[in-house]
Image 1 (cartoon, rainbow, N blue to C red):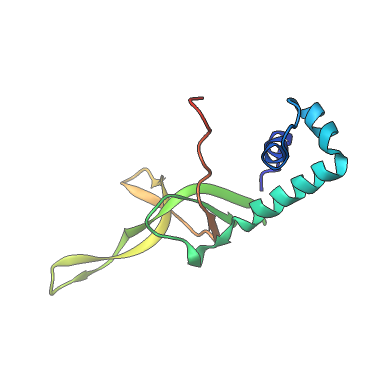
Image 2 (cartoon, rainbow, N blue to C red; image 1 turned 180 degrees about the vertical axis):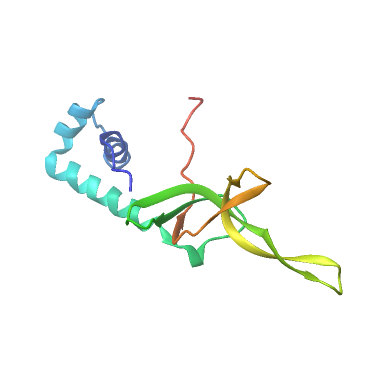
Length: 135
């Protein structure tokens, strides 16, 4: 998980408290160390709660996908569900391929032919909101 920054804590405090002075040091002094750290812990808890089991993931949009690799390191990337990820057979009656779905980021898995990387996420969360304003 990405650590909560001082700028995020300041933004949250500005929403909760009217009249907070401009600037990190001024804002921190205005609310006090205890309230600053309490806000940071609340934001960290909200950040951790945003991750949901992959079984609950919607399969109609791009998401932030996460998993632990073999050495236990947390990994994350954007990805989506692909219904026709891989042909698993052929239906003789309809003369169509039978596909299985999978999570993918559409990263190239093989350069010998068009093949995408399959992901095995355990968790997901919605993509974050874009920056405010025109920046």
